[in-house]
Amino acid sequence: MRDTVTILLALYQGETYLPAQLSSLLRLTGPRWRLLVSDDGSDDDGPALLHRFATRAGRDIRLIDGPGQGHAANFMHLLGQAPPGPVAFCDQDDVWFPDKLDRAMQALAPLGDRPGMYCGRSCVTAADLSPTHLSRLPRLSPSFGNALVQSLAGGNTIVLNRAGADLLRRCLPRTAPAAHDWWAYQVMTGCNGSVLYDPQPALAYRQHGNNAVGDNRAVSARAKRGLALLTGRFRADVERQMFALNAARPWMTPDARAQMDRFIAGRASGATGFWRSGAHRQGMGGTLALGVAAALGRI
Image (cartoon, rainbow, N blue to C red; front, side, top):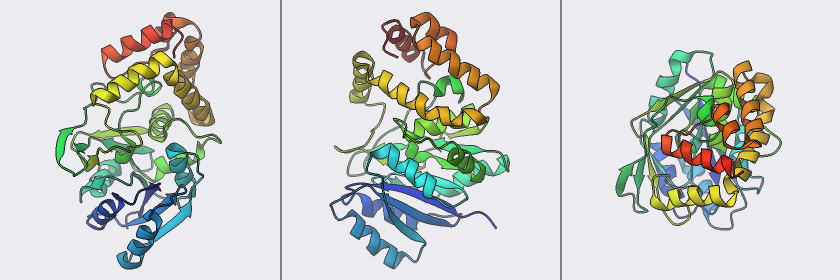
């Protein structure tokens, strides 16, 4: 019998789009699932909607209190509270395609007892769910060098097999990283896990005025990344990621530990140290921009 997948949903002020996401979960095919929701202090109708859904859905659905420390901390809290077994990260404002979990678990099945993380492409939509485009495909294979400075895919696409979820739980830091999906990618690639990228979208990634992150292909997103480099916010995010990643060091491969040390040392020695670390983004332009930022002390 296949494992039950625990869907981890971080809730905050989600009443507007939550019903559509919950309805999409009921249309899922394939593996059995349960739903664990962490509410981060909503004062709208989101928690009540969740309770009504639980009453009529006939599923194992549990609502817990979140830490009240933001999006990433809420997902880390969920991961720590989830029962053993595979898990799937779930945003409150998306709509999942019916075969999302089935495709993910089939992709992860050949890994057996080895840690694995499934992620992939999204169908980006407007607030009314009309499609606008597909999220960008990665140009390079998943690697720890890439994970040091960039997340590979949206957290809303991530599904972890039992061993992958166990690995992340062992590596949970005391302080949340800047981004939980970026941290998951770092841990998996640094600790010899497998990262499987699905080029076919498995969900509708709804864009609206209050997205926690948002589509990274948008002009506004590129502008935000450039501004983050110039203002030092990216440097602060990297600091948070490295601090959180330290909890994974006992399970990291020797090569990953050495590369992490080179990257940390290189951040203090300008562009030369950055290039020697082997850290890179998916595109050459992005990597060159990081090199310039390193020369300016912004990484």
